[in-house]
Amino acid sequence: MTTGTQSLQSRFTGLFLNPADSRLYACIRIAFAFVSLLNLIQIWPDREIFFTDVGMADQEVVRKYTVGAYLSVFDLCRDVGAVSNYMFFSGCGMVLLLLGVWPRVAAGIVFVWYMSYAMRNPLILVGWDEVLRCTSFLVLVSPMPACWSWRSRKARKRAAPELQVPCYGLTLMKVQLAAIYLQAVLARLDNEYWMSGDFMSFFLLSHNARWPGLWVLNYGFLLKIVTYLVLLVELAIPILLMVPRWRWFGFGAGILLHAGISLMSYNLMLFFLAMMTLYLSYLQPEDMNWLQRRLPRRTRQARV
Amino acid sequence: MRAPSQSSRKIMIVVFASAHLVFLLFGALPTRWRDRIHVSSVFNLYERVTRCHQLWNMFETIPNMHRTEARLIVQERGQKPREVGMVLPGLRRFSQHDQVRLNNWMVNVVFNPTRGVFRESYMKSAAEALLRTGRYGPRTQVSLEVIPAYTRSLLGVRSLKEIAVERPSVLGPFELETLVANKTQVQATP
Image (cartoon, rainbow over all chains, first blue to last red; front, side, top):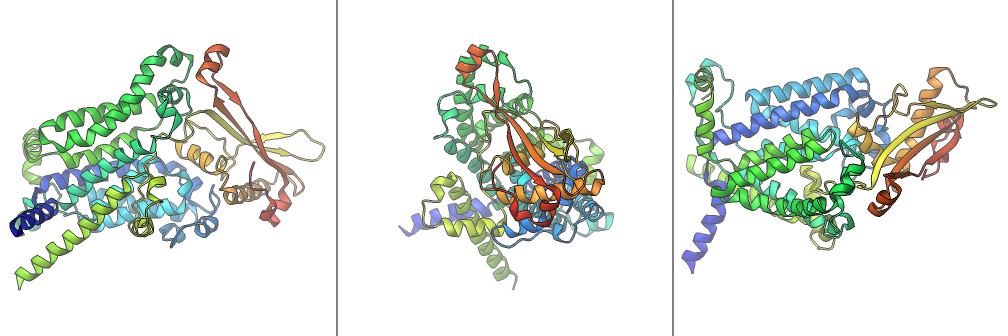
């Protein structure tokens, strides 16, 4: 009995403490920083509209109706100059995170950025903002091994990067991805458009669609199948990804699903990229070996 | 000395990661289901502290909305009404496809009956912006005209060969002077 309990306990703690390949964390850090930078670049032209006192949302009204404490750097940045400076500063944090320079501080800067703009203007948030904010929290609390980072020669001489670190960050990212799909499917169970199978037809006629038109009606039956297939695929993806042998089917299904969404919709490429960042947590050490073999030799030597 | 600190670090990792794991598993449930469970207040508190909101209702946002147009209509006494862009600052034109976040603002503010306070605040800011241009007097009237086009039933689209039907709504008119002086006079729904 005691052995059974001990085994269960060690299995549970193994979920968080088992050694993981540090390159996986580095890969996620780089991808997350890159997507964050793209997101910031997308917001940049509209910064005056979204975040200044002369824009679309009055900060005082937002503060009044925020549930809990209003914590946003935009409280200190109210005109376009200050907003630009803060966004530039956050962008620098993203570049540092991408390079792996002071990664914990950089991850903190990026997390504060996501928290700040979500608080300042919750009315403009889109799906990938939420995905990236949750990922930024997980990146912040995850191990930050020095591999695949830009380090000075002195620092490289001082200590070699750790090859293995605890896997808790990867576990939480995997569960986060599964939770996203599971909730998305469960929430649709009482949605008439999804349950009748008409969702895809309506979606392709909606303001989200890239080519709305009467052509959609010619594919009614096919689109019904696609609607149900999307639900099935979203349920299957986390299961496929969790079984190492089947993970490439999971990756394939996920990439097809999100590429399809990006192709058929306006402006959803960042959603695709944000989701793919979480997918990286399902990679295995042998995938990283494969990737590393394909890196140019000089880059490989400099980074590892 | 090293061993206990390593072990306490491991304990901290296990405790934190277990808590977050439970949070994520609970977060996989849709909001309606979560709210019925007693521990939802603890979940909400943790969600607020970590800012990891678990709301993944992707593509539930008005699937029957075909397109939206929105503009300010400004009318000075004895003159024809004039259309002005509704995006602040600068009163630029609203483009649904070019500005996906502004489109979300529209969905969240104009079409959400619980967000009257944000509509009030927007109208006040718009009035201030119009007055700042110097082209309009304080007695000029302004209204926000929103023209959503809703997709018909698939049967309707097939038989009428027309995708959507427009259902315009107007918030206003209000005098610029009144809006700037007292924003509470703006009614809650357009």
